[in-house]
Image (tube, rainbow over the protein chains, first blue to last red):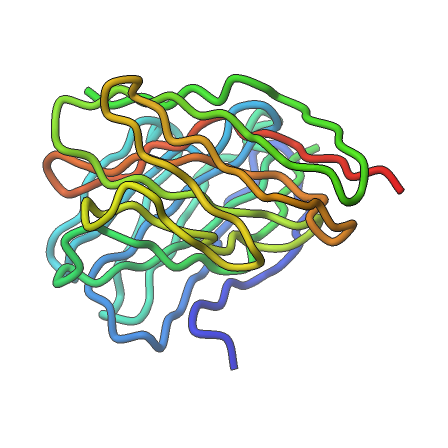
Amino acid sequence: DADVTQTPRNRITKTGKRIMLECSQTKGHDRMYWYRQDPGLGLRLIYYSFDVKDINKGEISDGYSVSRQAQAKFSLSLESAIPNQTALYFCATSDPRDGYNEQFFGPGTRLTVL
Amino acid sequence: AQSVTQLDSHVSVSEGTPVLLRCNYSSSYSPSLFWYVQHPNKGLQLLLKYTSAATLVKGINGFEAEFKKSETSFHLTKPSAHMSDAAEYFCVVSGGYGNKLVFGAGTILRVKS
């Protein structure tokens, strides 16, 4: 089984709808991250969480919110989806004991907002 | 502040010829550097990482990268390209508070038969 899983893998929705993307991990890592990938822009950090009670905004948090339900679960919500949120979304984890912050990525969720 | 510049958005090589993917970085800290690979419709896989132990870093699938502080570069190389190397490659820098990762824009590698 994969260490970092994301659901759904693909989602098509309409403008204005509320969407939740879920991430679960079995690696036992405290740190979790949400990124979006757009062609030609690489991955950009949306939110990150160092533990259940520590959540921080990344560089592009506007229009998004997150919830860290447990050490193993980190959800990303789009309260009112808009077309420019169409992208590939990745969840990642890391171990704070790793001073170099190697991150482990899920398979991604492809979101299309019509 | 940290940043990464991948100097080529697309690289095309013939199978069996060398691969060079170029990456320059900027960091206010002593950085950690990574190369990740993303095959079509797949997630990201770590190829290799520089953590100051050695300037020449060997990774998976025959890839290696050399950290050159004076040139602020971390170019990725492979002596002989294989068709399965066709993918998008990301150079990534980590450092500072929280050790957040900053990604380059990516280089798409095409391998011709």
